Length: 87
Ligand SMILES: [Zn+2]
Ligand SMILES: [Zn+2]
Image (cartoon, rainbow, N blue to C red; front, side, top):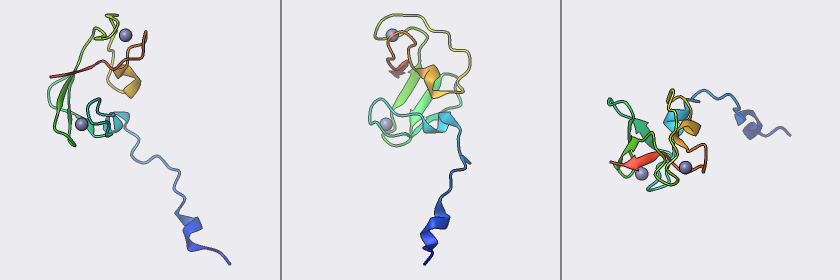
């Protein structure tokens, strides 16, 4: 008959704030959270602190950090490297 599990399909992105899903470069867990300081994030999993830098640590390209509203803003648009520097 009808399985009760078929009702559990929730495709509504209720918690879709991308900043709350940023992945920690150190431990790889999606637990980066913004701190009170602008441009600073902290991983609540491994407790590492990170700083969002304007110059790519990999290729040296300067990036424009307009708003930290997307996790893509934390990646270099030239090489795709993370713009997060461990602080
Ligand atoms: Zn971490
Ligand atoms: Zn780069």
